[in-house]
Length: 565
Image (cartoon, rainbow, N blue to C red; front, side, top):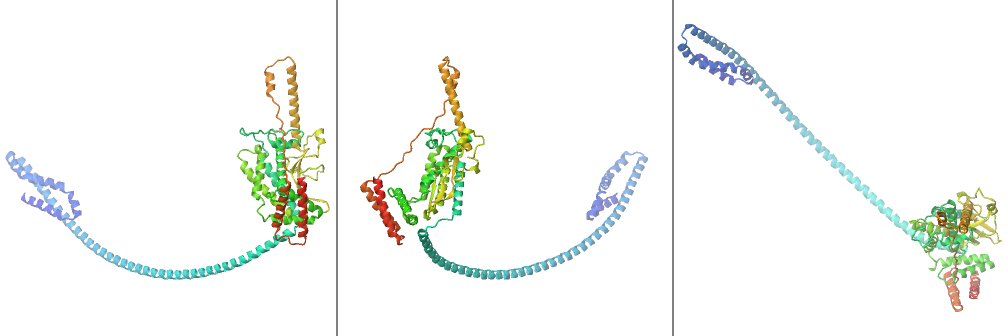
C-alpha cells in the first residue's frame, strides 16, 4: 500500500512537467486516477473494518483478491503512464527543437526584411531628392520663360498704346476735316436743293402707308363698350360728327365687322388730316413768330408764281436758317401733341389700359412720317400731300386697299348700290405728288380711299335700312295701338322698351383766325424781317440775295396790308 501511494504521488508531478499536448492527454486519465486515489485512501480504513466485521475467511479472501486486482491495475496503469510520459517527453523535445529552428528562420527573415526596408527608404529618399531638384530646375525655367513673355507682352502693349495715341491724334484731325466737309456739304445742299430719287421716294411712301395701315388695323378695329365713368357715350363722340357728312346714314355702333371697318376708316382719315395739317407742309416755320405760317406761305406762293427756282432757293435757305435757330419746335414735342390730339378723338375706340402704348406708337409713326417728308423741304420742285378726293372717279388715281380685304367690293350689291359704284367716300391716306414746271403731276403715292362699293360701306348702308324699316314698323304699330281700342298691356310695354337708336349729335368746327392791328402789324413785320435776315447771316451771299431781300420786303408789306383789310 505504501508503494502504491508513492507511485500515485509521483505521477501528478510528472504530469505537471509535461507540455501542453501531454496535459491534454492526461486530462482524460484524471478521473480514473482520482477514483483510484480515493479508493487507496479509503483502503486502510476498510481493511481493519473488514478484519473486524468479516468473520469468515471467504469474505476476506474475496476482498484480498479484490485488492490484488486493484494493485495489478495500478501497476499496469503506472507502466502505461511511464510509457506515455516518455513518448510525450520525446515529442516535447522535438517541438522545442522545431520551435528553436523556426525562431532562427524568423530572425533571418526579419533581418532580411529590415535590410530591404532600409534599401527601399534610401532609394525613395534619393528619388525624392532627384525629383525636387528637377522640379526646382523646371520651375526656374518656367518662371524665366513667363517673365520673358510678360516683358514682351508689356512691350507690345506699350507699342499698341503709342499706336492708339497716334491714331487718336489722326482721328482728331480727321474729325475736324470731316466736320468741315459736313459743313461744306450742308451749305452745298442748302444752295443746291436737289430732288430725291423718284424710285426711292416712292418706296418710302409705300412703306409709310403700309406701316400706317397696319398700326390702325392693330389698335382701332375693335369697338369696346363705353366706360361708365366717361362723360361721352360712343354715339355722342365728336369724331362721329365729322364722318356723318360723308355718309347718307349715321355711323353704326354695333359689334359687326362692317361697323369696325367704318370706324377704322374714320380713324385713318383723321390721322391723315393731322399729318397733312402738321407735317406734310410746304414750309416749316417757327411757331413763336406772330402769323408766321400765313406770312411764309404767302411769300412762298408769290415767289413760286414769279420764279420757281427763286422760290426753291428761298425755301432751302429759310429751312437751313431756321434749323440753326432755337425757335423751331422740337420734333418730340410736336409728335407728343399730335398723338395726344388723336388719342382724345379716339379715346373710346382704344381698350382700357392700352392708351399709353398707342400714344408711344403714334409718336413713333409721326417721327417716321416727318423723316419721310423732310427731303421735300429742299427740292427744286414743290411736293404736295392732300386728302382732297376731288371730283374725278378714275380708279387709277386712288387706291382702295383691296389687298387687305377690309374695304373690298361687295358681291351682293343691289341696283341702288350699283349707282354709287366707283365714287370715293373718304380719304384713308393722303395722295403725294410733285408739280413740275410744265404743270404736270408726278405721283409718288396715289393715296387710298374708301369707295362706295366697298363691303363695309354697303353693309353699313344695309344695316341702316334695316334699322330704319324696324323703326317705321314700330311707329306704325304704336300709332295703330294708340288710335285703336286703346288697350294697353304687356304688348305695349314691350314695344315701348324698343327705343330708337340715338342719332349723332351735330357739332360745329370753329376755326380761330387771328387779326393784326395796324401799328402792331408793322412792328411784327419789322421784327419778322429782322429775324429772317438775322437767321440767314452768312448764308445769303449770291447776287440774287439783294433781289430776294427786296422781293421778301415787298411781299411782307403786301401781306400785312391784306391782313389788316
